[in-house]
Image (cartoon, rainbow over all chains, first blue to last red; front, side, top):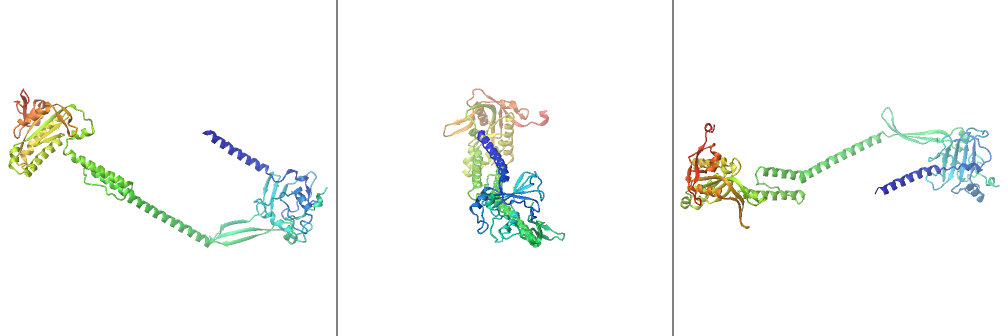
Length: 180
Length: 339
């Protein structure tokens, strides 16, 4: 009679352990993001609310660039709507200039996951603090509130003069940048 | 961490309750064009609303709700208690009172039955028990105690030491012929009842009534003394009272071993004593004159210190070849004589 209870106990223990492990493994931002293409070649250090003048470098995965190559008019003459799986990672450095060998102090990522309950505007807004090594998903409206301006004319990059829907991206990437 | 909306309730120094919202105003890129990009939060919108009235109203509602709930609870408990008292406690107490009344020896009582629930069924059972007890009590008037005991015990015969008392009314045949039957029966009942009361009060057991005769038995160490005491008491009562139509009794007492058991047939039986000790008591009773108590030598050995006895007499009795030595009980012994 004891055996079934022992089995159930160990099963629960196993599931709990799996749940804990899977949470650790479910880090959103992959470590190889720095091998992706950058959306803007230049280092961004123009002061902007939220990031101030901290230097920023932005990378996008192949899913995003493939979409742009297949839809070259997206974000210009037609609205842009990146597919699920698109990931954009923004390195945030401590100062406006990067010293050789300097690592970013944090990462901020947009992960297209339109069906996720924490998604805002179809994106998960994720921050990774290297001082703690932990990732957090923003569940409030802070990020999306600012980035919603990207879908109208704004003061950055090409300024989106046509007020085209650009799926919350200010510095809308050029697909040609990712070509070999 | 990004600024977040804060919502809370507060109370100022004047006791006013405020509902407050702090909403950060983000310096969005389009705002930064004019307001500058060097700050993330342009300001905070602070909204307050006096909710004292609402709070008070809420408190009134809570107090009213709690009072109403308490009132309902009390009402419910009262109804439940009343229901329990009416349906359970009251009837159980009544059954308790009835049982106490029965314990006091009064069988003229019963439980009032209401409804058809468990309590009512208990009341019915108690009433049946009362009926049974009453019947047994009434039966005890007609049947000896030993017979009643035998009904619940063994019926096999056994030899027991005892003292047998016979009391017979003298001149009763002539009395019964001269009086009407009602008077006879009434007088007989009165005399037998008076004797029986004395006998039972001294621990004797009425074995049977045979016409105008009583047969009683006394057991135990004090049996002989109690039987003689009963005989003297009967004589004194008959002498003093004028309610016995001047009738007198003659009494014979004998002690010995007799056979106690169920005597009779399967249809009709008595639980009684038989034997020589009984026969001798009966025979000397027949010889005892009106107002006389005869005891045999066997009994006399037990009681000579307690009673003043006559010199022994020899009586020839039916069924006995040898004469039986008997003593006439004169009176109770005086204390100084006892010493």
